[in-house]
Image (cartoon, rainbow, N blue to C red; front, side, top):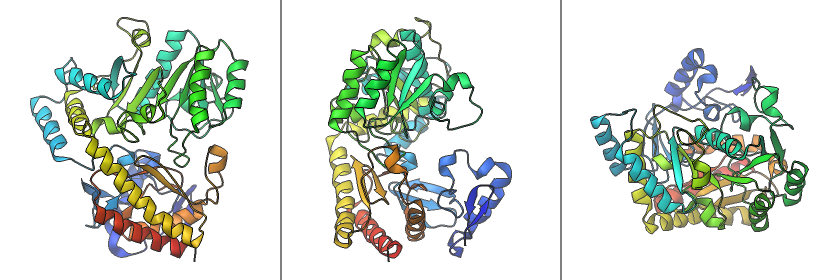
Amino acid sequence: MAQQESGIVTSAPRSNKTMRSKIASDEINLLIPGGVNSPFRSFHEVGGHTIFFEKAKGAKLTDIDGNEYIDYLGAWGPAILGHAPDSVVKACNAAVESGAVFGAPNLLELDMARMVQKHFPSIQQIRFVNSGTEAVMSAVRLARGHTGRELLVMFDGAYHGHSDSVLASTSHQSSSGIPKESSNKTIMTPYNNLELLESTLSKHDGQVAAVLIEPVCGSMGVVLPTVQFINGVRILCDKYNILLIFDEVLTGLRVAQGGAQALFNVQPDLTTFGKALGGGMPIGAYGGKQEIMSSLMPIGDVYQAGTFSGNPVTMAGGVEVLKLLDNKDVYDTLETRTAQLFNGIEEYVDKRALPIQLQRAGSMFSIIFNDKPVWNFEDSKTIDAERFAKFFHIILDAGINFPPSAVDAACVSAAHTEEEISDTVAIINTALGQVFQ
């Protein structure tokens, strides 16, 4: 039975099969706040103790108790090709043997930049950093420095990392410890509402540096933009002479070979990347028009730096990942497997008229416990988190690993086999039957 302790939901393990994880969870809570180094990893939304993993390969994870799981977390997005692809591991190992970090340029940075540019024509110049948070933080600073304006417009419910600019706003604040001055510089508006966006931009004409948008929102369900909305955002940014920043940390390379900007045929001024670009190594990047990127030091006056940025190990992994993703067959496989998963669940849901929404963009998907589609943050507030928590633990016990959140995106990888998808469909449908019995 779940119990509330210091705002965190906890519960006893359902069986002894994850006892080592339970013990490790109790121990780590004494040393690391909340027992995690990133709040997303916590089970505070679903209850129970976290699972400690010791091995990841292909579409499978193995925990410290020896239990195996078919994985749909994908390390929160990076594992497009599955975990630890052989050629990526080999490339990273070779780079480590030659020196993990130089603090100076290396040729792999050049190769990586060329390959990103090949996949994303909007990128004329690029800077590599170490995380999606760094990429967004740097792109926002660049936009403000380049335009000489300070206001940032974002959309309710979107997630852009943990820098002050994107956690604070005039309407709400996602964290304490953020100066009021930062809050006053960020304006929120509803996703998929072009009329309110134009009203905001008109009201602050000449003051907005950039509109920052997830072209597919991954933290309130997988929420796609309407065609009118995503095209309208580009038109409005041009109208008010505002930079458009696409946050493709989740969508870049995952929803299509050229990211969401290729999927929707909308070209941003700046793009931020992370996760998938490094194939499992810590990475971030931001890039766009040369005119804008030239505002960065040492040739401009906008500062950004990082000792590990562009390090040869990460670049080696990234180059190999992009080589593998240059093959159209990978995206055909991703589409086939994700469609197989969705078709199998959809048949069950429709037959029983369950209040479930299946939303996806490419291999990024969400099983939403709601009686209507989610188009924005307000819609996401009606998602049945209690039912999801029950569902989560049923499939976890059966060997399926999902994000421990009712609103965060799950992912299919190119390593998932037809048999693994079939097994997953059977387990998920059984779980839905139990949740709605």
